[in-house]
Length: 517
Ligand code: XMP
Image (cartoon, helix red, strand yellow):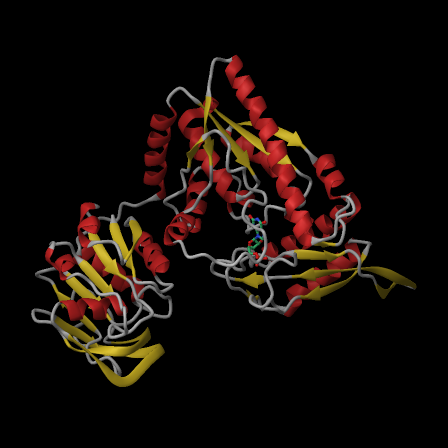
């Protein structure tokens, strides 16, 4: 394991991902963790992340020099580099020339461990006010820039390395190479973190945990629960029962993808609950977004609990005890809940489409170590349908919060048709994997006048909401090509009779959220 020590900037997760892209397993730990605790994890190497502060700021986190005496290879990045240089006896000063953004780096030793085989002049991403102006004893200076006289250092004897810039961001052209040079050459680590290995390891682990008990899993149609369940299926086969609540709020074809294609690909035993009527009845007359969310969340839990009780009874009839519940928790959730920083409740997200908290099962979370892109890679490796593996984020309350106004069967039908066209054109244009997601929103209580053929129309608008994002916390509207937007608009207005207008949402988040409700 490579430990990525998080100094509180937004870069730690990115660093952890880059390490894994180099096929070395990484985990994030907070900088407040004592050094003995870090070392007790027997790290193969340590990367110190960037951070928001100056090493001279009040309360700025420092690094215990003991970290550098343990014989563990270390790479310090940005703030982590300065903290390391300082702890080792170098000097950090205010140079008066802060560097932010793309910066020219001059590599002074192109045969060094980090820079071997790279050009002497390269563009890197900087973000610093202070700079190291004297390297600690025993270190060679291997690169400089205008604002950072000591922009990279290394000591191959002690296997300690540092760079002032951010190799983890794509703007640093040779950044990934530097990471790999550190991991594979500096630290001598093998590239053996592959999804095939992850699958093997998880399958063994799940098998051992489950023993002769039975497991239950709720499938949502999304990639996380689908991959988690497929892993458990591979491990324990018949001892898993999946439950799929069809609340009627999914998009066109999604229920079939779960019920038919997913089952065919994995062989899971699936219990489908057709709850479409029930959800429609519960939503009848409701227009308030929070109210809708609450109703959908509540109904989902009731239906799931009922289905779970049936699974327990059926398993019991075979002498099996249902002891475990599968959850598709991902690594970023684990890191974030460990960090414990509260964010404001903008919408009542959390358990909408989620499971009750007090279910009497133990959890199996086979994706706890994985980032989203790794989950997709596991899904592909397991042969899951690509519509599911590459599904964009979709909210638990589904189309229920994409119909502005009351949710009815007719309106769902209209929205499904429009949404299917937008998705189809986006994937034909090859952009569906590039954008984060593209909600299509039906303004069901709005009508506008149009003209089609010889006749006047009085139909509804739909809104296209294509966004790009890293994590859904912030987002920007995607600049989709005009001809693609034109195709989507033409097709929707031609093929969906009730819709006579297509509009584009050009609001970033903040101030707009991604979904309209
Ligand atoms: P907003 O609209 O808050 O959405 O910008 C951020 C991301 O979360 C998704 N979303 C949800 N996901 N249950 C979920 O599992 C929900 O209730 C929910 N509401 C929004 C949304 O699609 C976007 O990706």
